[in-house]
Amino acid sequence: MEKISVIDMGSNSIRLLMAELEGGKLVGAEKLLSMTRLGAGVDQTGLLRQMSMDETIEAVRAFKALADGRGSRLLGAFATSAVREAGNGHAFARRVELETDVPVEIVSGEEEAVLGFQGVLAGLTHPGRVLVIDIGGGSAELILGDSEGIAHKVSLPLGAVRMTERWLKSDPPTMSEVDALRGDALEHLDAWRELVIGYRPESAVGIGGTATTLGAIALGMKAYDRERIQGFELSVRGLDDLILRLSEMPLEVRREVPGLQPKRADIIIAGALVLETILKTFDMTGYGVSDYDNLEGLLVSRGYLNL
Image 1 (cartoon, rainbow, N blue to C red):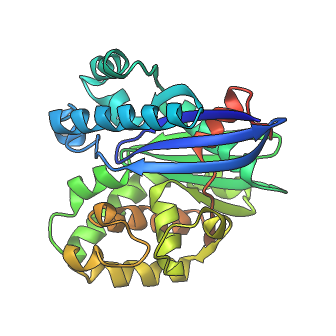
Image 2: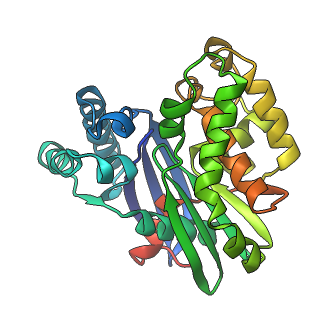
């Protein structure tokens, strides 16, 4: 059995996957997460904040020590929206490498989309034509494809941290703020409506913190359960109900909602609104949750995990 680990340095959180593989199959997996909010302020200033960078480096260091302690070979880390967009992103990536001895690869939005799609395929038994939706902290990736590969992909600046900072200033957010966020999302999505609907996806699959967290809230999870969340279906109507419920709560009340990590409570409404707008724009009736995402996708791309 081979033990392999990989780190995702996202705009909202940094995550570690420790995988156990036999003959190209995943026989065991553990994911850990630390919310360092690396993308905070990047939309306004174009720079990563010192505190977020420091906390991210500490998380990488801790994850490396954990992987080493488990005898799991750490392939490295890949950085997404916040690092690739920030003016000091490349310098930060080099700093991570120097201070932790963990190699860092900055992936493009299109590469991020490919990794997410490959991860989803690794978790699906009989994929038909699918729309994969990955809402991160800084960006959202949309991927159309099937078991034969990707037909279309796009990365849009619609991440939950970015959209919260841009539009949701009040606590709880006002209706005008909610409408403005929806309008911004729709402006970015409208150009893709004809293409996506014309592809006729049979289903939508959501990956990333927004999609999995909304599923966990709908299930009332007190502790996140990877096996229980995988494949859970959330309808547009159910999502609308969650948005209405969450958007009426002040932040301190949202932090107590089962299934919602307290540190994600301030950005979950924005993420949910973006997801809702995507589903409605493309005439989808709901989405299935996938815990398999770009972390598993990286193992696929490196040849460790078979589809």
